[in-house]
Length: 146
Picture 1 (tube, rainbow, N blue to C red):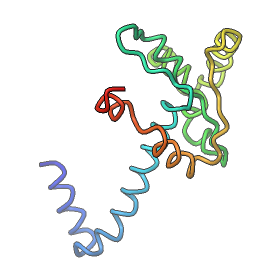
Picture 2 (picture 1 turned 90 degrees about the vertical axis):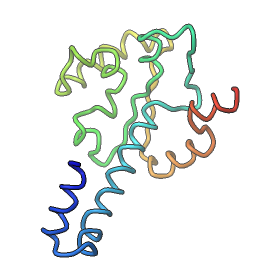
Picture 3 (picture 1 turned 135 degrees about the vertical axis):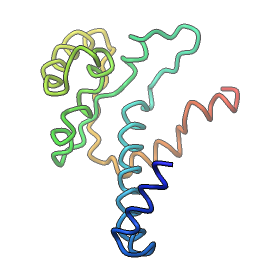
Picture 4 (picture 1 turned 180 degrees about the vertical axis):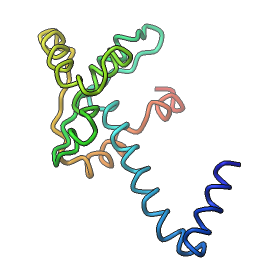
């Protein structure tokens, strides 16, 4: 019901359904694509392990990837992109404005153990499509019995 009310009010503000579509839909699709891109890339990489029965919170958190997006994106997003591992390990204890320091600490512990992953992802626009087409998702692998 809330979505319907919002749509009707937005349509009235824009003057017509056509004007609403011209204003709202491009912004919606850009936002949806960006949210998918960041989320997918933070949780998928060529070497990402998928745990079933032996999954633990820490194992899952160390399978996430810190990705540098460049273009000021990391700073704009309060370093949730390049501080993603620390975010997963300490999401309730560390606010985003301390993620850079927390990431340095996490990296100093996990990297010598081979458990820290950081990737330069300035090619995110292409990489999300390549990874999705070559790796798919865990749901697809489960459906295929892999």
